Length: 74
Image 1 (cartoon, rainbow, N blue to C red):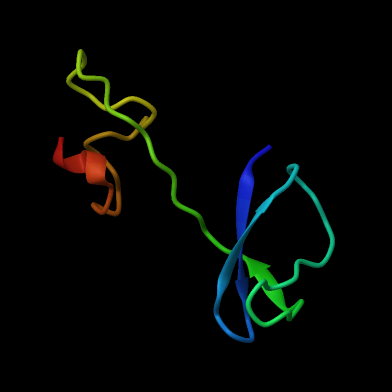
Image 2: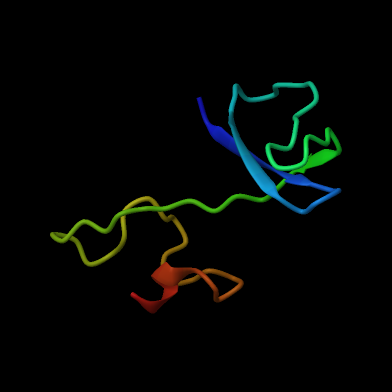
């Protein structure tokens, strides 16, 4: 099951939830208790295989359109 992050619209705290894809229902902020939350864009991590010159797990390595991908410096 993936971990999803939700941003509280009241206090701006981000809370992580382990849930199935497409899960519905209110998510409660662990900091203030508000149910006014929205799904946040989460980042991910990928490890580099020392035997390879390109990173593992990133199909856009070296050509990320935003230029902010850490793998674009490889």
